[in-house]
Image 1 (tube, rainbow, N blue to C red):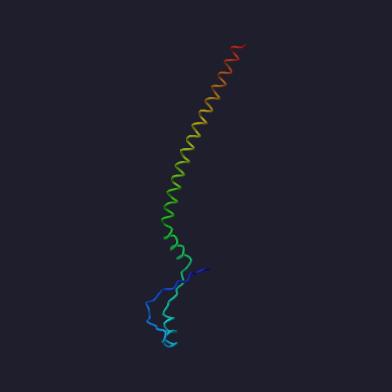
Image 2 (cartoon, rainbow, N blue to C red; image 1 turned 60 degrees about the vertical axis):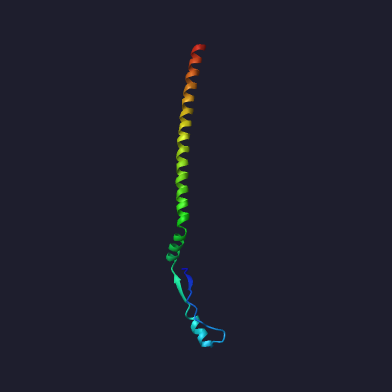
Length: 100
């Protein structure tokens, strides 16, 4: 299980270079770390990526619309091809009748 550790910055404690070692040690304990669960990480990432998700959803919708138009165009061309094949057969049968 992974957990992200974040450091919460505390206000300046006022430590100066001449302060005692004890005061320095106490001030370092004032920095608080907390663990973020994987679920919280995903929620945070999802919140930051919300704009990207919206853009991707819009792109998917656009691509689906283009796909629908392409499918309609293909269906139209297939119908034209079937009609042309039927017409060709009719013309061939008429030509055979006139020959014989």
